[in-house]
Length: 242
Image (cartoon, rainbow, N blue to C red; front, side, top):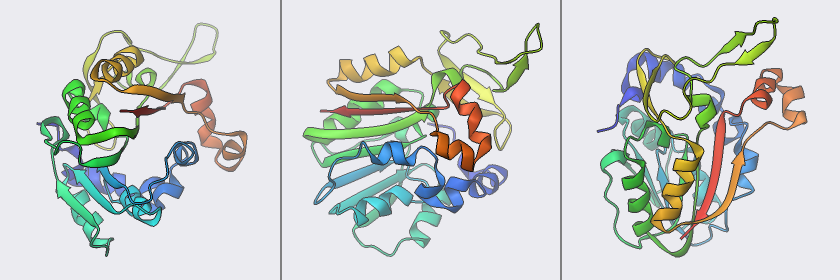
């Protein structure tokens, strides 16, 4: 079973104050890049894996999706998603993505935002998603970039000559990493980019787009703190097709 850190009170309270939690998709700097990759969702049956507060689930309906299934391990997240949604075509359910069953060929599009780095058995989940999609369906997801994850406590270091560098810790050593983010002892599962992409390919997905996201100059001017994302990517965006 995946670690249910989002139901810890201190974590949930901290997460609820993030820009993407307060402002939804508009508060996520990577959203314009993701939106450009989305197919036409008109009439689609959509599964939102790690749906959180339900921001994308509601967007999918606004974009014309016929039905949306939002799944999340956190009871607190699902409760908030239900409270913020008054659409009978969106079904929110508590589910552990590490043990997730989905009916075969029951969805036209799958989506996930920043959830898969909490998943231990990525191969099992990818196979489950592949079986659940109809032929030709697309799957778009984001995950913490492996370079960002490859540090037990991400942060800048000062080099021998006073330069500021980003410390990468044993990038090739895959497996669980413990970090303190919003709460102590948050477990995330580090995988290299090659493992992530090769798992998708071996399962039968065709890679359509891979983006090591970086903010635009306009975004940096508006939010200067985003400048560090140019020096080391924080988010990996992937689009595949069955």
